[in-house]
Image (cartoon, rainbow, N blue to C red; front, side, top):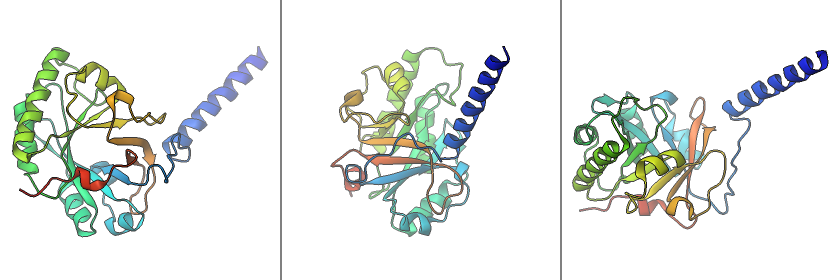
Length: 239
């Protein structure tokens, strides 16, 4: 029994140690080839605190998605500073909205558009659709889909381009459910590398949530464009 207890203790210690190394970014489960995935970007919010955008630019980051809003009334406290900072150093920038399942899509869209009015040359807006961190009291996924459709239509009408959908495999299956196929996907897959045709094809891949980038304290999400894609394809054309 002592041997079993010792073995369990060693296993628990290894699991805890591995978890720490993963959260600290020491262990990266995905290491996409720079030759195959040369266009790299980040997504940030107030969780990253003040960012030295000059250092970020010199690190080779080509694009940045910046959290602007969440739900019908939350605005990210670092959005304006990050929006201006990325522009000042020439990093292509886009804004994203975290879609909550318990607020009307029209109200969420109006809030996003107040904070981020259409801007030619910016990257296409993104709506983050996931269960993690979302409200629990929504009525049904059918209602969530209807409100999401309203949000997308309203933002597309204002910006003149269809927003990009940020999804996890779970939200892609349960929320999108084959109803939003005309929208480009930004896929979160931090454990494995998705094939180019996974989930019907994707445009952006988040391959890490614990990345390290000069100019940013602590972990940051790392992203890559699908092979052959360019940042120019994400930009909103001039009217």
